[in-house]
Amino acid sequence: MSAESIGSRGFTYWRLRFQAWRGNRPFWGGLFTMIGGLPIAYLPYADMRLGNMTIAMATTAGAGSLIIGVLLVTLGLTMWFQSVVRVFAGIAAIVLALVSIPVANLGGFGLGLICALIGGGLSAAWAPGAPVDAAGRDADTAPEPAAEPAPVAEVTMIKPLALPEQREGQEQAPNEHATETTIDANGGRNSAG
Image (cartoon, rainbow, N blue to C red):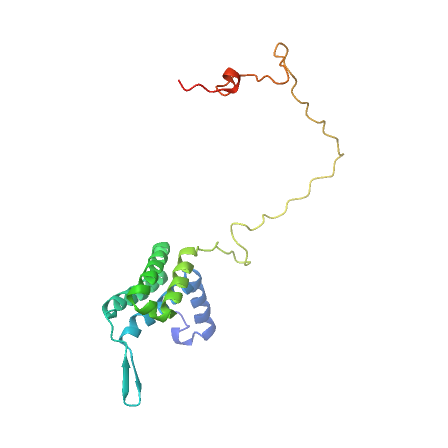
């Protein structure tokens, strides 16, 4: 065991570790998808009390909206912890958000619908970034160390390329083509048989 215990690590260590974890997955897509699943699942079962009066959203959408909400939260967690299937999870979140419009009280009154659509789109569009070297540059695009510059030599003019000329014996009239095609046969008329 090292001399430094786990308990003595400061806030900066955990913040940097979280940033590294967050950068390797569609974090915001998963977060928006999970946030979108909560109102879709909760609102059909919620009731509001005004004094002695209770207003309940008791509809037939209860079971369907609970299933859609739980699936959206599960897809959000999948985006976080299995980022390999991020495109599938994103498209599935978009489809479930659209299905929640007729099934789950207009998609959780639009709150869950919008959040789930944004989360699914972010997840489907996310791609891992290029690795970064110690200097903070992309490892793939890091410039190579500069070699010594080539000595300046005399500048010589490059001769222009010669254009190919007409071969002898292949002289053409201005309106004739070198080969005759079916379009040009019979004066431009096509025959169907």
